[in-house]
Image (cartoon, rainbow over all chains, first blue to last red; front, top):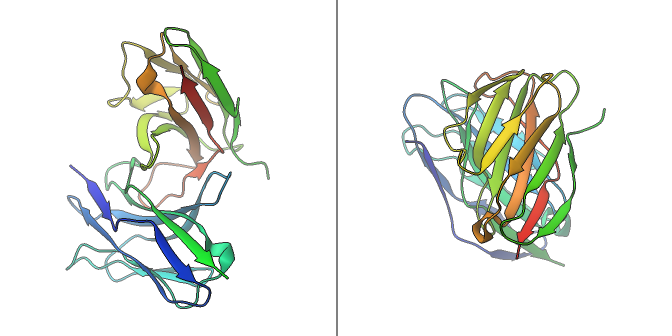
Length: 112
Length: 115
């Protein structure tokens, strides 16, 4: 079955540091890949997505590239801000339906 | 545009009691999802509706959980009787359709505590 593995957290960075959160997946076929973010006290929000191999999703300075050869979708940001503090979830969408399979989430804390 | 609305936001009950959660999706969204999110984990799908029809309920514990979406708009998820292990956040989401890559919009969730 489908599965998503995220790097273990929590992650603590200083403002303006470089961020990488690793995500790898196992799936049949060609799934869509997503990063969702959950800010404190709020619901999950879509951050970015990619629907086919080599696609790059980007939003708010975050980027992730769909790498079929390494079954990865790592999230990166060149310079994090305190406001980026949140929990980040990598997710996989099945090819035949819309069930999302989530990773366990990575808590990011950015200190001033 | 209003987002996905859920109520209540918090619920505390004793075990063996019943509980119900309500969700109103974004207007025009035909697909509605209920997820459960245990502490420190990602959400897991319980059930998915296409209009009024439950098209994916394979992960729903049917001995105690039930759900309905009678008019293809809002939905109710019920647990009866609740157990200690049901403590979690119950998330509702909706989307325009079910195609690959389709964005799901999530509500704020209902945090259930079973004592």
